[in-house]
Image (cartoon, rainbow, N blue to C red; front, side, top):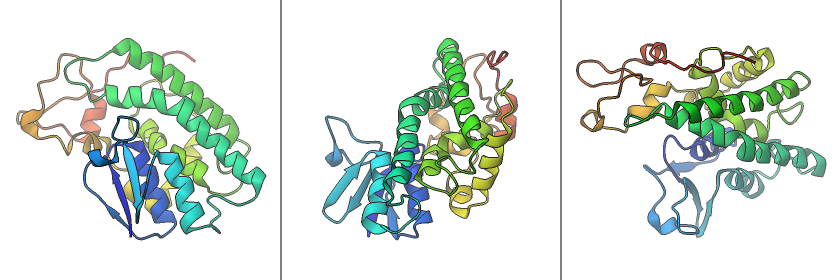
Length: 246
């Protein structure tokens, strides 16, 4: 059976889970981050797949491998060279242009000792630019890589949910992006495994006693028992002087 290692918050883990569910492959979800024995180039990967005696890290490599090795006829990653190249191009775009600003924004909201508002604001402006590129693409195509659901859509799934769930003040309206998100939510695997409350993702693995008191202006507030407020209340506590312009 396939075995997947990776942290709950890791986007690579979430992408792999979604692909495994869509392909209806049996797998075991190992708790916690990958074991140190899986160190690659001096670092433990954020996500790792074990298939018998074969071990693979890197989220998008795992997506391709699952299709090639276990579902070669799947439309998620078709054989046709041009269709596959289109998907690969969007996988690369997501990894090189989208992942970095998305991570800066999302991890920034979890900081309790400090918060770099300038870095978060800059990342948000960059992130908006990437979503505008997707908005233009989706105004002409039903899915990212064309007319059918594919690995390209899976690659954007985790950060797409975070984009809408954060409810960032001044967030520009992107109707095609929203329609795509709603369409993905109709898929059980995405809805059940990726579209979870952000407060749950951010805090359930951190004991209440380990949560230091946040400084003034922190995005989240806590109740008298030092527990994070509900997702809705936490979102109302957000104070972000960004995205005020185009």
